[in-house]
Image 1 (cartoon, protein in one colour):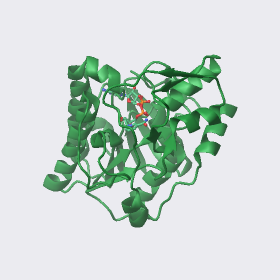
Image 2 (cartoon, helix red, strand yellow):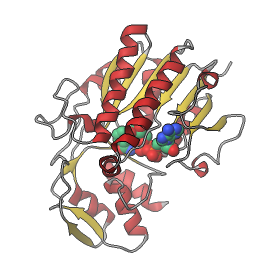
Image 3 (tube, rainbow, N blue to C red):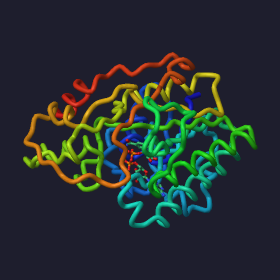
Image 4 (tube, rainbow, N blue to C red):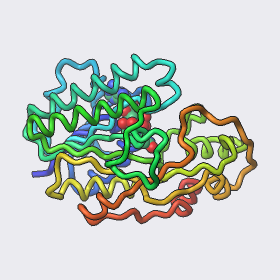
Length: 301
Ligand SMILES: NC(=O)c1ccc[n+]([C@@H]2O[C@H](COP(=O)([O-])OP(=O)(O)OC[C@H]3O[C@@H](n4cnc5c(N)ncnc54)[C@H](O)[C@@H]3O)[C@@H](O)[C@H]2O)c1
């Protein structure tokens, strides 16, 4: 019988890409999404027999459990995922991301799942003291978004400990790839540049552009998900990045557009870089898509 995977936030950028990978290897996927930022069109290429879409707010539902019945794997990606709006409305972020995670983990715990994977965030390292940053390095929560994602991880790990749930937390660094939300408002740098390039606007570079980030292509990220499913590892936290640092000026040079420098935003680190040796060692995975190739593919579509 086909394996069943439940993906919360499956209509979003990362969730819809993960859905593609799971369908490709023969899983039946149930997507739970309230479409606050996700889109039906992100999944419209799938057949109904492969992907069932349920419109639901995971933080408000009283009856989540019924969607998890018979599930082998749960991927919990649903969250409000932008930093600046979280500073404006922390309570909304807390209710959505923390209560949402508690409801998902409670529902999943009633079913005998093989593994639950949580989308945590490298924002837990704040302005890191050590680069590359490893999972053991200091937690430094700089904004409400980071707080909610970190509490979510603590809940996931606590359930793993208390109820022996087979849970994994992946701390994503800067993920990019097809269907990246091109809002152009609060989006991450690559989504901003894509939006600006498509609309013939200058690329807005925060500060001097010398700051660096760790960009990971969503296909590399999804491959790590697929490998961890088959592994013996549970109750673990892993960084999920490329392990390479890239400056914003370099990203702008790949986009090859006019530049406009804007003032720095408070609370953002100068540099961010994942130490990914733990994940590489445990599941024999490594990222394969270079930033140059990843961005050129995005610009082609
Ligand atoms: N994109 C990144 O670089 C990055 C980095 C670190 C962590 N993450 C985490 O990865 C996950 C996915 O991020 P993304 O970039 O794909 O963002 P996204 O906004 O595209 O996806 C989030 C999805 O969750 C859905 N959602 C939000 N609240 C919901 C609720 N209460 N009930 C049901 N559905 C809800 C949205 O509609 C959307 O489809 C998030 O948890 C985010 O915090 C992303």
